[in-house]
Image (cartoon, rainbow, N blue to C red; front, side, top):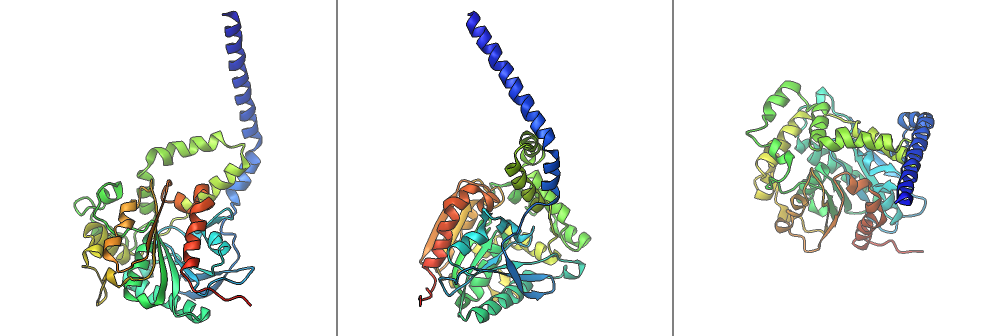
Amino acid sequence: MAASFFDYAFDMQKKAWDEGFKQWNRLLNVPNVMEHATQPRINTTPHDVVYEKDSLKLYHYRRDTPAVVREPVVVCYALVNRPYILDLQPDRSVVRRLLDAGLDVYLIDWGVPTAADQAHTLHDYICCSIRKVVDEVRLWSGTPNVNILGYCMGGTMSTLYTSLYPDTVKNLALMAAPIDFSAEDSLLHLWTKEENFDVDRLIDAYGNCPATFLQSTFQLMKPVQNFIEKYAGFVENMHDDRFLENYFAMERWTNDNIPVAGETFREFVKCFYQRNQIVKGEYRLGNEKIDLKNITCPLLLLAAEFDHLVRPESTFGIIPHVGSKDIEKKEIRAGHVGLAVSSKAHKAFWPEAAKWFVERSTPIEAG
């Protein structure tokens, strides 16, 4: 009995000593904390701006070796947040996984809309901007079509683009893209219901959808994780430089919010979240009716099991409506952002997705 008591007391003393040692390490590491906070290393893959129009910039990522296929990948990101989440850090970069597989990669940075852009509609973004970008890339690469990877809202826009201009798309990959809005199992669907959210009053008052409104909405979907657990984890790991590097890279991106052009936001909420017009075949871009059956190219659907913004069923809901025969689904145990940056995603998930593009593109013969 005595031995057990002394063992217990020794064990508790050791735990107290270890925790005290960690506390000292955390305090001594404060200078490194400040360095990581002020200078997070993000978006480090070398690239050139090869096309600009208004706030839009098109990045072309440099390759050390020639591409192995003719068709480049055009990455279409959402209009919410900044696109460098796809090139956050060298070991957590979707762009680098595509480059590693031998693909030529371009990425659309939509920039920050101003008050002058509040009248921009989805027609402007898709039929003007994306179409112009794809035409430019086709010209530079000398190919009749390109591969497209669309993330989140960018995946929705990529889908609409491909249905209108199917001959310009070799392969289409949709990454956590909301397509079928019929499900009601997420807070976002509940909050955007017509009886709960008057999008007209918001946009009529502000012009553009404010960045602060979007950020607070996303944060309140997971309040415990965003306002308690995240900071508790930070304090617990202040002594870990690798943790700090990852933490402040994500913090930089999470808080780098941008507004959304007012008319585009109004249209997205009304036509998609509230009326589900894409899969119902009721949506029009300008005078053109969207018919998903026009999409006949190979289709890759990428989803995250724990995605609280875009449930996998919303992305997979495109399947019954397209004309594609070659359709592949990949799902990972991650969240909406983890799909792009988690270490699990970059070990196998993204190398396999990149390989999917390569296998369905035109090989460049060696020699």
